[in-house]
Length: 539
Image 1: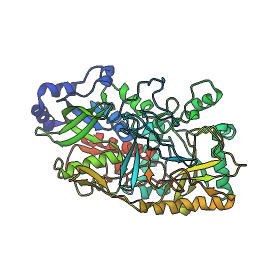
Image 2: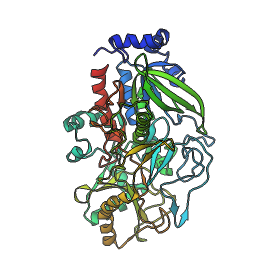
Image 3: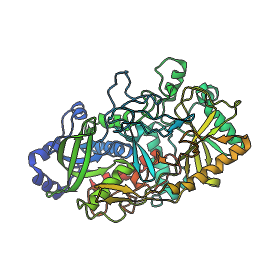
Image 4: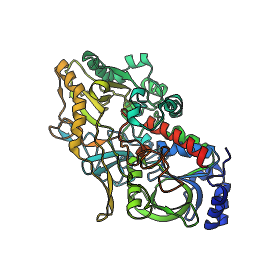
């Protein structure tokens, strides 16, 4: 393959002519040293071969493979870089003591577990560009990572590949052979997925909660599975031995993990920076993309301060643009661009097919003889797999409160047919989502196929104090937004947006609403598949 930095033939010549030969030559010829690129924000009027909007799983894959193919890339990220310690010496806040670092532009936390032992636990915090966004739509709150590394900063790290027999329902237009033979193995290797050491799992105090969850699943004849994660298990064992600073074993997860988790910053993005071909601009938000008169696309960007206020506007030109702002971010942007006339030729599938991966949470109150432990590792590693019989896969999740709760807690991923649509609300100047909370009943019923049976067998009851007052189900949220720019509908079968050559979607918005399990490995593997094809044929 001959790479020409994202341009070829007469289109490349006309692009440079239309945007200034000096700027074009600088963009095509390189931007200096890798260190300089890593620390330099994108400049107004820049001309670049490839712009990647977002630094999560899909965007990181795209940037790495483009750079390795010889293309200069710029990544823009709405959130912060998360590379500078705060006053406490830590980059991220602890789960039990959230401060301004915890939430994206809120003055009060909005924790997934809003109550504990009958009391509300949300607290006032200074408004700041924190790491976790609780974005509220009608009927649902969508939790998303904000920062360089996207969702990898705040997820539980469960690196689950769906069973092959379910794949046809996840991505029906994708060849499963290539995914399971090539792209899933590639994604898992790059992400650093691995299993907990069995002997340590059986003996450590930190996973007593998971062993209790396994015991209850076994006694009700539910299959349980150990799942890989992207945590450094050697580091966690050293945490337990007291030889390194604690991370998972002091509950770090919801607002970032300071040491042991292999977020994208330590995997794909470390390799991205090492190429010397990629610049990353944190606190930059793309507000519009429209065809440029000389070829390529004009992209309008706002630079933000840590209050979330725009402090500068920039207009750049890119030959190719990769939308990787996450399912919600990409979908909202594309819907806005179509409705407002910036990209009017996007097809009618844009904004459709959005789902919550069937997320629903619950807790069970165990007997006094089944303590789950004061010390609970924040990294789940065990799941109850009742997908075939009941349409639910349930993580045995931690409640790292530092006290004995005698509670088992679960995040379920369930089979649900419900899909929502994003639409442009011209009067309000924003994008709406038509999700209905009532749609969660399907997910609740699927989760009950597991937990009603366990409660009956164990003589236990559901906790009613975690999501409000006398409320059993956490049915108001999702951690796993998927869809909104569905593969082979809003795009072709490799993420090329219909109507606009050089525009691509390469994130979770391509996946129609469900991955059966935690989605980030599938998002990564699909991005690996798509970018390989795009580089081979479009560059």
